[in-house]
Length: 445
Image (cartoon, rainbow, N blue to C red; front, top):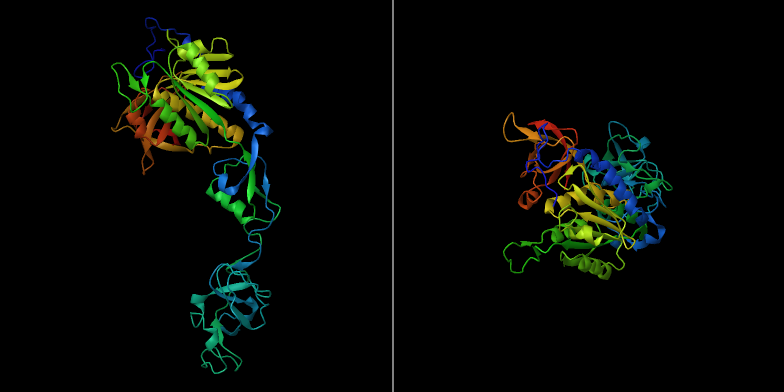
C-alpha cells in the first residue's frame, strides 16, 4: 500500500530514505482529477437517460429543461389579511363608516364592491372588482366580523348606516395595502425553475402551485459498489484475528443513497483478480457506474489494479490527503472509479469527486454548502500544519458561534472522529500552517 506521512506535516528539506522527491510533481491536482471525473461521467447526461415522473416521485431529481410558469402566482388579486376589502378613495384619515356587503370567503367569486361599501374578506380570498385595499379586522370598529343574520335596519346607531343595514368604521388606507396582486410571486411565462435545478420540497411545491402534475428529470444513476480485501469481514459475522469489519460498504452506500443514487451492493471481493473481474461482470449488468474501494495503491496485493490490467483504467495519485490513490477509467465500457480502502479516504473521495461531478452534470444531488469558519484549535497560539503540496481535507464540528473544531487527526482510519463531524475542513495546497482563529472553508455534511 502507498505509505503516507503519519502526521501530515510538511517533510523537512532533506530527502528521507526511500522518499521520491518527484512524487509531488507527478501528483494530479484535485481540480484536474475532479474535471477528469466529470468527463468520465458525461454520458450520464444523454437524452435516453431522462424520464417524466409525477411530482411525488421526483424528490431529489434534477430538471432536464427550464420550466416556464403556465399561469401567474397568485392567479388573481387576493387578500393578505382577514379584514375588509375597500375602495381606498372612500376612506378618510379620520375614519369613515361604510356599509357592509356580503362576506368573501376563500375560494368564492365575489360580487363587485359597491361605492361606499366594505366587504368582509378572508385571507387568500379574491379581491372584489372595484376594491383596491384591505383594512385588517383589528383596525375596524367593531374589531370583529358581524353576524350577517343579525345585521338589520334596527342595528344600533354606533354600527348603523342610514337605515339600510350594518356599517363598520374603518381608518384611511392607501391603495394596494394588504393586497397580493396578480403575478406578484411569478408572472405567467416567466422561468419558474432553471434546467439542472435539484428538486427539493420548495421546488416541488412551486410546481404544484403552478398546476403541474409531473416533471421531466434525469434518471437516477445506478452504481455497483464493491468492497475488496481478504482482510474484510461483513458486520455481524465472527471476527478472526487479523481481520476487520467492512465499514466502507455501509459508509459509501449510505452516502450514495443520500445523494440520490441507486446502489447495488456486490458484497466483498477477495484479493483474487479473476474473482473480482467475474463479480464485476456478473453484478454489473445494467449499472451506470462501478465504484470499488481498496486495492488501488502500489502495494504487492492491489487486487483492483490487477483486475483492471486489460482495461482502460488509470491508477494515479492525486495531491490530496486523505484519498491520494485513485483509479479512473472504464470496465467493459462502464465508467469506473476506484477509491482507496481506508474509510475516511473513500468518503472524502466521494465528496470531492463523485458527488460534485453528478451535481455538475445532472443537477443532483444539491451542492454541499460552503461556509467560512474560524478555526478553534483548543488553545491560543495553536497551529494546524498541512503538507504544502497537498489539498488536505480534515473533519470538524461547526459550532454555533461560527468556529470549527477539528475532530481527530488527519489519519484516514479515524471513523469515530468522522462520525462526530458535521463538516469537511479544507486546507488548500500551498497552505502549510494555520493558526487558531484563522478562517477556513468548510463544507456542510
